[in-house]
Length: 114
Image 1 (cartoon, rainbow, N blue to C red):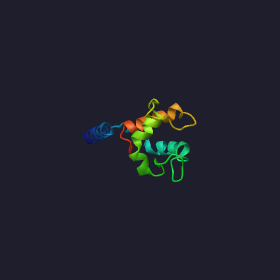
Image 2: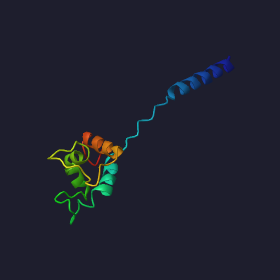
Image 3: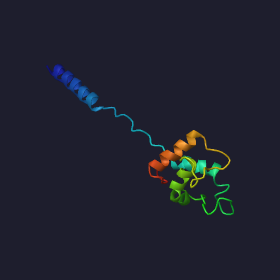
Image 4: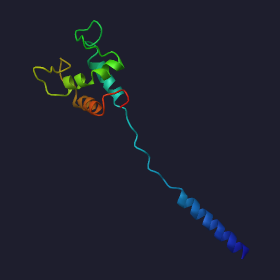
């Protein structure tokens, strides 16, 4: 009788332990877009849009400036060209993947934290 109670206790404890070990799916890993946007701008825009550059008064050398000009960046790189909206960079369009990153970053708020 004592062995039976011990065996049932062990089985009960094991069952409770197994049931309580719930496997939570990993939360989706968020990837910040701003570092990618900044890299795109550094590779394609800063040569002109920096102090002494031809692209002034737009200066894209700081994170704050990039965020402040988020709408302008999207308009110049992603939106269709128009008489009021010159395409940038002037030597040709960005790759579609870069345009997608900029558009998504802008749509998500255009900040350093997204």
